[in-house]
Amino acid sequence: MLIALDSLPWPWGEDLLAFLFMAGAFVRPRRWRRAIVWASAQRPDRPWRLAAAVCAFRGRWVARWRLVGIRAPEQLRRNLTVEGAEHLVAVEGGAILLEFHLGPPGVELPLRALRYEVRHVGWHDRPAGWWNEAWRPLLAPDDLSTAAEDPKKWPAVLYKARQTLLDGGKICIMADSEQGQEVFRIALPGGPMMIRPGWVTLHRLTGAPVLPVFTHLRGRTQIITIHPPLPTDESDPARRLESWQDIITSLVVDYVGRFPEQCPAQALVYRYE
Image 1 (tube, rainbow, N blue to C red):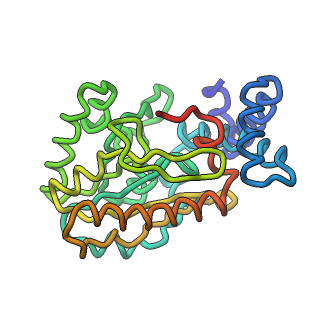
Image 2: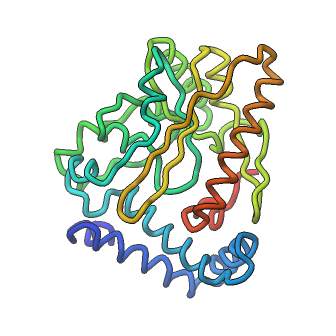
């Protein structure tokens, strides 16, 4: 089906997939109940509207992940905006861009399309046979992502990521991935977000600054917001992590409050415990 939708002019395929995911929720009671329960925790007055919107956004997420109807990087570029780019540009040497399972799919590919040199740490399955040659340079397999397909190789992935940072590279890594033990959790209406330790480990090993990054859709445009580096003036690692927890919690709670319909990972996907 994705191949058929990909043949349509953008954004027709994306819009159709959003509609299909919304309609599909009505015939899948378990998913619809989950969406309603989550939406009721956000907006008790009319939860069904938010539930339908978040189901539709899941379809839009899949379309963006697979670049349905987007023929070339230039087409993607025209619908991207980066806010706070100066925070990343100001970093000399390695940097950790801390992502979250919120909004449209990860920021690594959009940033690379905008000619930022970043690498993704963690598994993803972007390669697909029908993409044209214009995408090949941006979609070539990376050992930081392909090795992460096997959870047993996660320490090796972090080792390679560490070397990338020490060499002055920039990496993107999910704060709420499934790898590793919980370092803290963020209380949210409808269920908590579990924060895992990969990025903390990389910071402690390299000293690379950590910049929280969030992304959302404003109409057809994907907005990527890069926040200032998390403060490092606290020398005690435990206290530093506590201060970071406060900052990250504030950012995540603010995002979910402003864009609840763009949080399908929180509303629909089982959380890793």
